[in-house]
Amino acid sequence: MSKLKRTAFYDRHVALGAKMVEFGGWEMPVFYPTGIVEEHLATRKGAGLFDVSHMGRFIVRGAGALKFLQHVLSNNAEALNTKKTGAQYTFVPTESGGAVDDAYLYRFVEDEYLLVVNAANREKDWIHFQTFLGIFEEVELIDCTEEIVMLALLGPKSCNLLEGIVQSGPLPEPRRNAVSIVSISGAEVMVSRTGYTGEPLCFELFVRKDDALMLWDQLVVKGATPIGLGARDTLRLEAGLPLYDHELGKDHEGKEIPIMACPQAKFAVSFSPLKGEFVGRAALAKHFEALSKIFLRDYSLMAHLPRMIKPIAVVGRGVAREGTKVFKDDMHVGYVTSGTMVPLWAVEGEGLSSVQTDQHLLRSICLAYIDNDIIEDEKVTLEIRGKAVTAVVVACHLRSDAPPYARPIVLEDKIPTAELPSGDVKIKVRRPGY
Image (cartoon, rainbow, N blue to C red):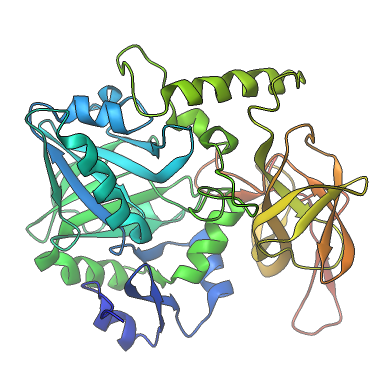
């Protein structure tokens, strides 16, 4: 077995008492002594600090860089502008319209791009890209994973916290995917308004390895809470965001999951004429045509896109784990791709006037790859430990369009309760959100 890699923050994690595990070939913190629930809640109410340096980072530059990226990625890289939208979610598509990986592309400076890929897919992606390099002239592809570290700072207090340590340079414009370059203690830090938890206030930070510990220490001193991979997963699940090998890749029957089965494809696939022909374009166009009809309740092309990733709220007692079978009227219609119990802050009031309390609850939610003729608000049945458990297909588990807080969306007919420490009183929770 090869030796596990360690990020620049390994000693900081150990000193904080983190439980370290193997993930994608790296030794990473899965949680700290306070535990996953507290870390999840700390991000939703404060500012969570995530070591994401295990992610793969490739620099793409040269006169042919843009043409190369337009061919091997699903989004329109030409839309990136360092002064406006400098980052975009994208896929690395297969010819058949599935995903080699999902990724984020950044353009902090005019003459190069930074592509961030999943840690477990770094080597696979590198090999995949090599097969296309010979087609394009003047393209330089550099693996900078070891030289540039990556942190995520996410949550309602993250902006004020970051402003407190920036010496010069503006933070990115207050809109998703904006980027900028700032100076912190003399170090150049690339900052983007991106993240993987659904928080409306979110930042990802890129800095040279030599400046990594300085940046981490300043953020912690200012009040950021270190967060492990466990809470990162519950946060992204609540936000309905995909994870490769769960919502992307192969399904539980060994079939390729089409990119268009992922709701985020609407932001990450472009058919702009500026792209020309690119890997998987024909298959993606066919899947998109089917999806357009399905949105209109026309299932005539459903054979091209039979299933979709959809959020499901568990109404009965039970936790839906990955691989749980989903049924509709006794017919098997799909599988849970990700599922667990996630915490949420109890609130007082309704809608935008709601206020978080100091009490938290737990709810059972999941994402599932299910037949496309099952629509929102329909009841389904989950087979959990041999028992049939009622669940409902929902629009989302979380809303992020009213900063600074991400707002959990709870079913009207399943309002959870939380016991106060005394155990004598229960808080009735109104539906958070809208």
